[in-house]
Amino acid sequence: MADPKPVKIIRPTTRRGELRKWRIRGLIAGGAAVVLAGAAFGVVALTRSDSSACGGSKSGLSLVAGECVGVTDGSTYHFSDDLAPIEALIASENAAAINSGQPVVTIALLNPITASATSALDAPQVRNQIEGAYTAQYRANHLPPVIGDERPLIRLVLANEGSHEDQWPQVVRQLEAMKSDPAPLVAVAGLGVSTIQTELGAQELARQHIATVSAIDSADQLNFATIPGFIRITASNRQNVASLADYLRPLTTTAKASGIMVFDSNSDNASSVDLFTKSLRDDLQKSFSKLLTAAPQSFVGVSDPAEATPDLFAAITSNICAVKPDVVFYAGRSVDLTSFIDALETRVCAQTPIVIATAGSNLGKIREQEAAMKAKGITMVYATLADATGWLAGAPGTPQHFADFATTFRKLGFPDADLSDGGAIATHDSVLVAARAVRLAAQAGSGRGLQPKAADVFNEVLNMNNQYVVPSASGDLSYYYRADDPAASSDPGGRPLPVIAIPAAPPWASPTPSIYMTQ
Image 1 (cartoon, rainbow, N blue to C red):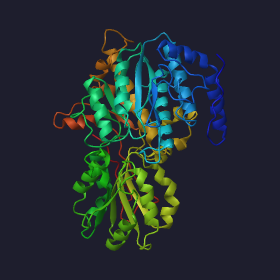
Image 2: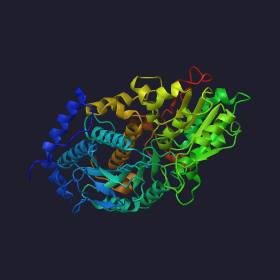
Image 3: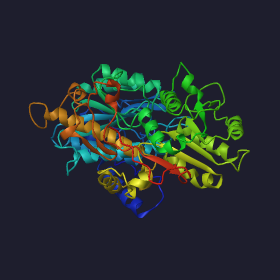
Image 4: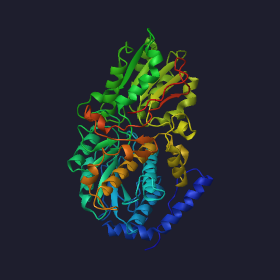
């Protein structure tokens, strides 16, 4: 078979980019090994000329509602030109693991991998998350050992459930069938965003005793009590709001302070509940009830298709100007936050400063609006899963092992800019935590290097504590059963919960804010 044509890399040309380009070309030149390895697992690899078409015989992919969904090991199909280089890296690492002669198991990254104008994750965020997942696979499979013994090796597959996760039933069934593969599926990482689709998919995987490690799902409704075997990397909304409350304490203790709630009305849609916006709204209401003296304002978010026109903020900004609150609490997704800020920049009370407070997992893109926000008197204060900018600079509270992760991330050819939204960090940790559970299950077997089953890994997710904490990029994460609050068993202990203020801290903020930590 002829060698595939080189993949076009859509990146600005830099020295690191050139090195990365030659690395990719070298991997593609060895494509024959990838094809042979894929065939060994019943996967028919497509030539580059065929990869423009979705699916193919036994490829595990199919075209549904205009999107290519299903499971791939990276060798059969490229979801986009932008994702082709990282998929090639994953395919090469998978081939190396399969051909090593060592025991191999499979971890799936279950995510929306195709993006649209109304999806909760855009195309760059999807790419960044996959880069993080591959970095974790690489670190788990190569010396020096990050999570103990390097066996079994990790095979990583990409499972696309569609831009709005609507195709989760088909994809979850595919994953369940992979439990009996030669490199059996033993855990699922990622899990998209906090929606009812995510909850239903995770519950189905739990019924099959497949552990799930969420990257950015923070909705309180997603927890170990309702989904056995489910743990997460990010903190819950409840914990994030507690971190935000700690930061806002100087304001909340002021007698005349006031606030207003702006929320996504999709959280009230019983047919398609957005679990993230609903629980964030409830947690903000509970923590800041004394400040919320004005009538709440609702909008229709774009990420949950509805008949009403989304992103209508004109009336909301006028009402905010009429009330002049000290804080605007935002209970919505980041995909709508940009439009809300745009609307505030043209508000009628242009001379009145605005402070927006919120929490979320992928808010790093807001920094792109920092200059305009500064010019228009808008400040954003948000609790989030990672402070990539601060951590890269070694700011106080930087997790102990973040630098090791960042070094490998750069070594693999990925730029620091891809860390900014936090998705690469969280998804790396999601796959690394899953791999740690895999290695624990192998050690608990009859001998080192054992190939554990999904049920073995399922039973280890709450044993990652004490000697077996996970040295992840976002902290020394630990998981254990919390008898007093079983739902909280999903949440990681040992990670900082940063609160970021842009373009600068509000005047009432403490000059030395405390670093809130999960317990």
